[in-house]
Length: 114
Image (spheres, rainbow, N blue to C red):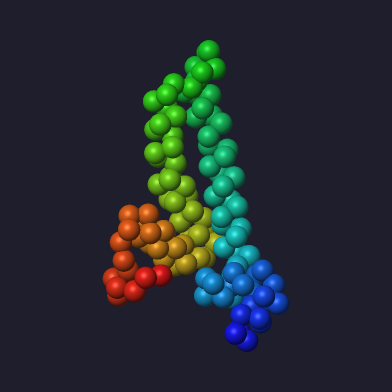
């Protein structure tokens, strides 16, 4: 109970640091990697949509389906690249593994739910 009260009083960086198991300074670097990844995906989408739309401006249904199917692995790959560039590859590699285990309903190798 006392820990819960302490966590409510702690700042958002401390809460994220505790949740992720990192120091508050690493929280900023990790958030920067997420932000850079989001901006990169956003900037990559515009020329792809322009290319797929052609002269009439309409996006083909196949393009939309392919975009939404492929954006998840592309986003995760870019996130790993930014994580490596910012010195946080291990954190993001573990983050990706947890994400995909949850996505596909697999338990971690030690059998515990996380």
